[in-house]
Amino acid sequence: MRRLRSALTLTALATCVALVPGAAAAAPAPRDLSVTVHTAGRVAVSGATWQHAWPGVYFEGRFRGTGVGIVLDDATGDYEVEVDGRPYATLVTPGSTTYRVTGLTAGVHSVRVVKRSEVPWATSTFGGFVPVDGEILPAPPARDLQLELDGDSFTAGYGNTSTSRDCTGEQVTRTTNADLSFGALTARALGADYQLNAFSGRGMVRNYGGGEPGTSYRTYYDRALPGVAGDVWDRPSDWQPDAVVVGLGINDFSTALGSNEEWSSPAALREAWVDAYHGFLDTLRARYPDAFLVVTGTYVSTGTDQSELAERVVDERQAAGDERVRYWYYGNDGLDYGGCHWHPSVHDHQVIAAQLTDFLTALPLGDGPTPTPTPTPTPTLTPTPTTSPTPVIPSPTVRPTACRATLTVGGTWPGGYQASVEVTAATAVSRWSTALTLPSGGAVTHLWSGTASSTGTVVTVRNAEWNGTLPSGGHTVFGFLGTGTPPANGAVPCTA
Image (tube, rainbow, N blue to C red; front, side, top):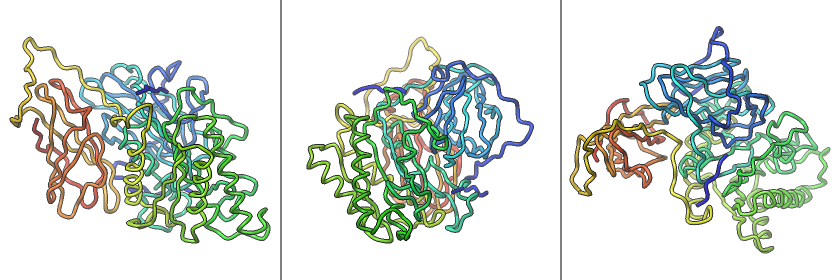
């Protein structure tokens, strides 16, 4: 297996915080951010900072100490902050600041910052991680698997945490969470690095309602900063995604043609769309010779042009000899479209993500078999040396005191929530299991970094293949999305 590197003020998350005037001034950023920060998103180097604009761009780092500073300059977008794999804060339009994470237990920690909002016309700046009490460590490694998701508002997670379908532009921005979009959820389930190159309202040849004539999604695709005309993303040579999922066409076909538009008839629009799609796939194939190119069809209330033509494109590509172009369809079964302006809700994104995860898992991604999922990097603490470590003896005997587990609920929204569980080994273990008791009527709908089975309201989560072995004092984190009332924070049963 190859190893690879590297519209728009509500919030539905309980962890939301707003930065107040007078926050500490930004500290000097590292000379070369790539030494201490891992990202797979599209960034443009600007001095000692990275500029970015696409939704879902994330930055990951490691540090030793009790806190860390996050250098940001963004007066428009919002961010999610995770520490050690658990939600820590939501930063709403942070401005120019160093946001400080403090009060942690001394040791090695991981930090992840992700741009949750979609504001492609605005340029945001990330200045790196800086020490608060301790030191910044080398960047965590890239993941084995890479996914690229190119699409429109569905891909961006447009208004997915909203409690109402009626939203102002400002409300769309505050309630869009790209980190809970189906693409991000799928990447997390597969342990993949990913890009969400999504631009709401744009189509393959025609934008929503015929807006901004002469432009389309393809106008912006090659840019690191979509709002900067002439910008071109300096793509790293090691960005070679195993799969590219293209979700375009809803905006092309969801509104009627106007008399002043360039296509003489719906039939002419359909043929132009097919031709443009082939051209876009030609570009992707030249750039990513070995990737699976996944053409997405989906339910559109105004007709079946999008899905039928997408399938036609795939048939024609395969007939021409490209067997690594595949068609994937998801319908409206089980979807409530409760997000802003009848877009998929967080619940809907979970449903879609489960289908996409199954679809991609069945493909021979990479140079060999489908890779074992890897988690968002969570450093394992170095165990304190002992003179006579306890040997791990394969045995079915359960040792109740061999591990402990703590559940923390992060983001919540009407009818659902996100939570994580940290498992810590009291002695060296080769496997572990936890038992989560959910409130009545609740269920786990999506889980990563573990395997789950349910009996009534009790969900048993066991280790995945890669995170079962822990040294004494070592720890790992699994996470899940649930429906219903969140469980209480605190200790949960753990056996090893």
